[in-house]
Image 1 (cartoon, rainbow, N blue to C red):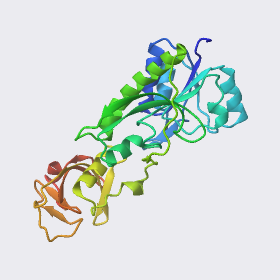
Image 2: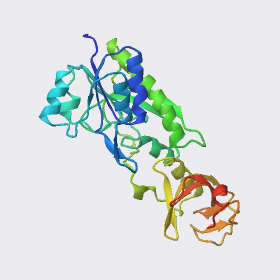
Image 3: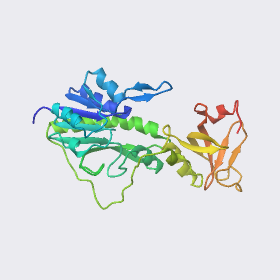
Image 4: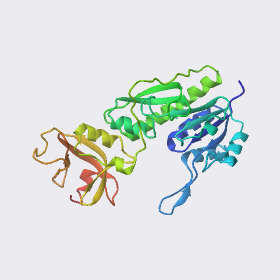
Length: 308
């Protein structure tokens, strides 16, 4: 096999350890493709993606196409003569891009495929109360997240995990799996296993603000998993008196903790130490939230100067 010439595609923080581990292990990353700079903050200053910042630190050429099918971009991509492309948390690729290298293009996905295909696998695994997730490397093909599996690595989801804690662990576990995959490809000794058919698939569609509203009619444990699965970002929310409250941490309470005659979504509080909300089968304690126009805080801290 010719020496590997790798093009790396990714945008957020999740992809950075995978890029860095390849560089640290002396693999030839000939170019990086990432999202265009975006305006951020009050001043709307153009800000580079975490992957771009990493690439520039190592003097790797950066491409930031707005159109992945444009002749100019495709010509530039071809000029790097890569024989392998790696995708970690990037956008959907057209076939003309993923089929370009001789070896192919593999993706790192934050679930144990075939489960949780889609844009938000970590979120949905926690929302659904899963006890285990993981990372998968697989070769891209036409249908999203359906290509042949190369390697997988499992990761437990603990009782009090949220998206932030699982994301952190999978980010680093994923980097190790990317390195393992590239080494196996370099040695021309790697599995390529078709994903199983005929089983019930759980999906992980993109999450929108409307998706994040809490349904208090659900049982307490489902509400708790929903909050965990959206914390710290984009955050579950509920409204009260026309104001939106983002909710980051809750705890289940005994079913007899509050007034049993109250309807779901009802509040119970002493405006001092606790805030309970009635669910479909009991009560939940709000532990940490962000009232509209304020910073994220513990409920007890909120009550030092405010009331509900």
